[in-house]
Amino acid sequence: MREIQVSSGNVSDVSAQLRPLLTRARFLVAVTGAGISRASGLPLLRETIDGVPLAWFFRRESLDEAPERYYDLYRRLLSEWRHARPNPAHLGLARHGVWVITQNIDGLHRDAGTEHLIELHGNLRELRCPGCGALYAAELVWRTHVPACARCGRVLHPGVTLEGEQIRHFSLAVDWVGRCEVLYVVGTSLKMDPVRRLPELARRNGAWVVWINREAERLLPRLLPGSGGLNA
Ligand SMILES: [Zn+2]
Image (cartoon, rainbow, N blue to C red):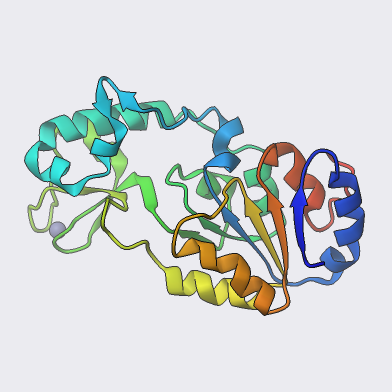
C-alpha cells in the first residue's frame, strides 16, 4: 500500500513503516492547506471581519468599486495575521529540505525558511500591480491609504489570487509532484480542482502519498527523514 492516512493512533507504526523509504528518498514534496497553520495562532478564516463578509475580500469587483474600504479590511487582516509564527510542522518541512506547494496565503512557509516554495494562491504580505506586474511589500499600506504603483500609477492588488483568477505556477507543481518519491498532504483534503489531481499523479509515478489532516504540528515531525520518529 502506497497511500497512508496518519492519525495519532497509527503514527508510530507509520513512522516505522516509512523509515527505510525516508532514509533513501532524495526528493520529498508536501502539499499544504489551512490545517497546517491552525496551531500558529492564525485567526481562522471567519465569516466576517468588522461586519464585512470575508468572501467580499476575495472579489476583484470589491477592490475596483470600493478601494478605500477594501484597504481598510486588508489592514485589519494583515495586522491580525502578522503575529502568527511557523509551528513545528512548517519548521520540520523546512529543516528537512522538503519542497512545499501551499494553498495558504499566510507566508508561514517563507518564515520557516522553506527554500523551494510554490504559493498557489499568492501571499497576503505582498502587493502586486495589475498593470506592470511590479511587486511591493505589504507594509506600504501603513504609509498610504490606497497604495498605487510607483511605476505606472495603477491601484495595487493584494498579492493573493482573487475569485475567478487562475492559481499560480500549477504546471511547476505538477512537475515537482511527478518527480517526488514521497508526497505529504498536510492540513488539506484537496477537494478542489486542479489540486485534487496531485495525489493521483504522485501515485501513478510510484510515490508514496502520506495524508496528515489533523495535528500536523505534532505528527508530521515524526514522519520526516532523520527524525528517528522520536521527537514528537
Ligand atoms: Zn505598475
